[in-house]
Image (cartoon, rainbow, N blue to C red; front, side, top):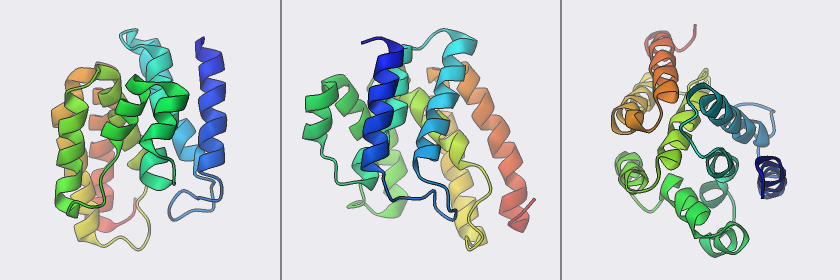
Length: 182
């Protein structure tokens, strides 16, 4: 399939699977988060030309279906193949692990796969570094910032454009860590 057909297919699938979910702390449907991650990836493809656009965008659109829905690895594998299913699985944090180990575990699984998987993780954290939910305590905002720094440190080699964007977003996020708002 070409990029357009793959994008349309994955977007429809993700929209159905995330139906009824909202971006945390907002009234926006969750698919907005997913498309924002895909947009970051598309811009990185345009800026650097060093990513497989179809693979990376499909991963971006599907990156949360294992973590946040009832979709199974087998379902993704049957629909999109092992490369996509393995990428989505690596991007999934396992709730069975203690919270402080989830990111490191996912990063270890991401690092052994193609650079597009790491690029999607960078894009996901870029999108997630908007204003935190109003009820987040300072400790949670600090942990989120620290996780972003770890993601940047471990995956910056996967795409220079996204690494620079994430570094910029981390700097902007500092005001939320200190005050809770901008």
